[in-house]
Length: 441
Length: 145
Image (cartoon, rainbow over all chains, first blue to last red; front, side, top):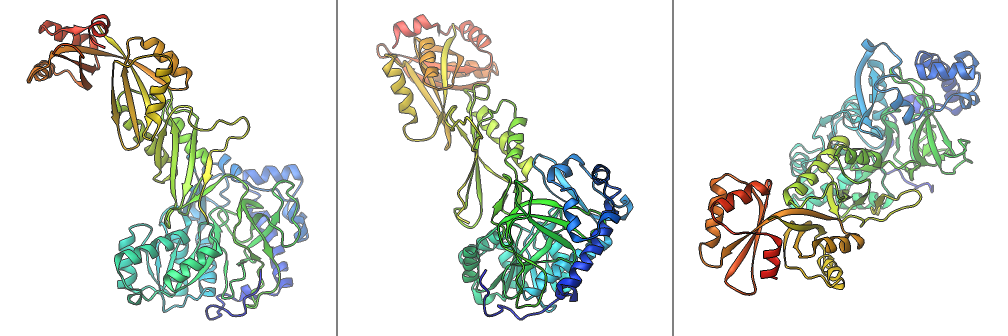
C-alpha cells in the first residue's frame, strides 16, 4: 500500500489506546487473552476443546500460545444454536443481534451493557478518524434491526456527540429529502447504496449545493477503490471504509484513518491472525490470507480465533496518524461461497433450502448477480420439472410467487425469479457452478 | 369423449417455439391446433395432435417436458351466438373453465371449442344433456384436421 502524503480530513484520535506503543499493546493483549480464555471456559464448545487440548488460562504464557487455542467457525456457532456460546448469565445480556446463517436460521450474538459501551467507542474511533465531529449530523441509511450496522453506527455517532438521523435503509427519495432538509454532513450506508443515492440525486433534481454532505462512512460489503472514486466524484465528499462482522462485534473492528492507508484494527480489543485457509498456518507478512479474530474484551459473546472467511492482507508498517493498530486491506474475497447482496449476507445454500421448501422444484437452479445501476440485482433461475409443470398459467404463476416468497423468507431479500425450461441449465459432473456474480466491483 | 392435449413449458424467448415445431415436423407429425398462453417471462404451449403419444415421445426425446391433460372438444355452429350458447350452459352450472380456445374446420361451417375443466367428465355429461355435440378423437380428427 503506497502511503498518501496528505490526510484527507483533519487528524483526530478518539481514544488514547489507539496510540499505545506496540510493546504495551502486546502486554495488554496477553493479559486480556488470559482473561478471555478464563471467561470462555464455561462455554461448552470451549470447555470441551480445552479438556481435549489440556488448556487453561494459566497455560497461556505468551501471545504465541494463541496458536494452541481452538479455531471457531460459523458452523460451530450454528451447532450451538441459538445461544450456546453465551458466556454470561442471561440476565446480563443487554441486546441481541444476528446475521444470516448458511441455512434459514440466523446466528445470534449478544452484548452486555459493557459490551455495548465498548462497541460505541470502537465505532466512534473510526468515525472520528474519518472526520466526524460532535457538531455534525449523521444520516444513517443502514437497516436497523438484527443487522449490527444500524444500531452499531447509531450509538457510535451518539458517543461522539453527533446528531443522528436514523433514516434506516430504503426509500431513496425520502433519504434525499432528509439529507436536504435535516442537512446531514455525514452519510452512513453501504457503498452501493451511496452510489444508488447519487443516482437519485440526479433524478430528483435536488441540487448538490442544497446539501451539506461532506463525509461518508461506508461498510457492510466489499467495495473497491474505483467505487470510492465514483462515490467521491458523484457526491463531492470524502469516503471512508470500515469493517466488522457481527460474530466478532459488528462495525468497529477496524476502520480507516485520515490517511486511508488501510483499516486500523482495534488491537486492544481483538487479536488478528492472517492464515492460509487450507493449512491454517500464518501467511508470510503482507500476504493475503483469511482473517481470524480473537475477541479480548467482549463479555457476552467472546470468541477465540473466529474464522471470518474474509480474505485480506495485514500491514504492520507505521502509519503517519500514529495509531499503532495493524492495518488490514480491503476484503478481497471469501473462502466460502457467501455472497453479500446490498449489505446482506446470503449463502447459496439458503436459496437451495428455500427451493426445497417449495415442493417439487428441481435441484437445478442458478443465481445471477448483476449491478446494472448502483444496486445489486439477483435473479434466481429455476428449472421447471415434470412435477412442477402444469398446463395452467395460474399454477405456474403461483409456483413463481411461492418460490419468491420462500427465498424472501429465508434471506430477507427480494429476488427476481425466472422459471426456465427443463434441462436448460448447465449440468455438472463435479462441483456445480450455480453462482454467476457479474458485478464489476 | 375426452381429447388428449399436450402442454409444454416455454421460455418467452426467440426461437423457443420454432424448436418445438421443428422437432414435430422432422417426425412428420401434424399439429391439428394449438394455443399459446404467455406472460412476459414464459408461456405454455398447448397442442392438439392426432398421434399425441408419438408426439409426446418425440418431444421428450428432444428434452422437452410434456404434460398430457384431458380436454373437452365440443362442436359449435360457426355463426354469431354459437359460442355464447355453450358458455351459458357452462356458466349456469357453475362449472369453472380453466381455459379454452377455439378453431374452425377446414371444411364445413363448424367451429370446435376446446375446454379445460377441472372435472371433464361432469362437463361432458352436462353438455351432452343439453344436446351439444361433444367430440371424441375419431370424430375430431377424421372430420377436421
